[in-house]
Image (cartoon, helix red, strand yellow):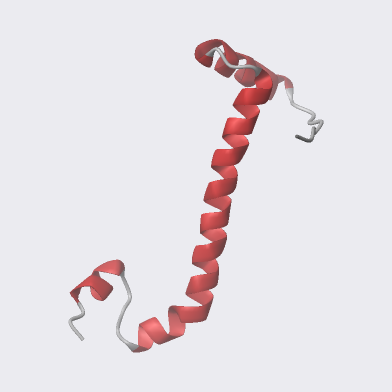
Length: 75
């Protein structure tokens, strides 16, 4: 496991301390949980943006503007 030093504002430090008290977890555990959650969302957004770039034009040509359009298309 590697380590990382992060500088926090006073507000961030208070919020982190509160999260630790509420969950019973250490600062490292809370930060790892939050970072993991955030990175999953980031990777999903990146994948969706890539798919939109690669497939958006073809979807519009097929008349698909929303998810509903895709689900209702019977072709």
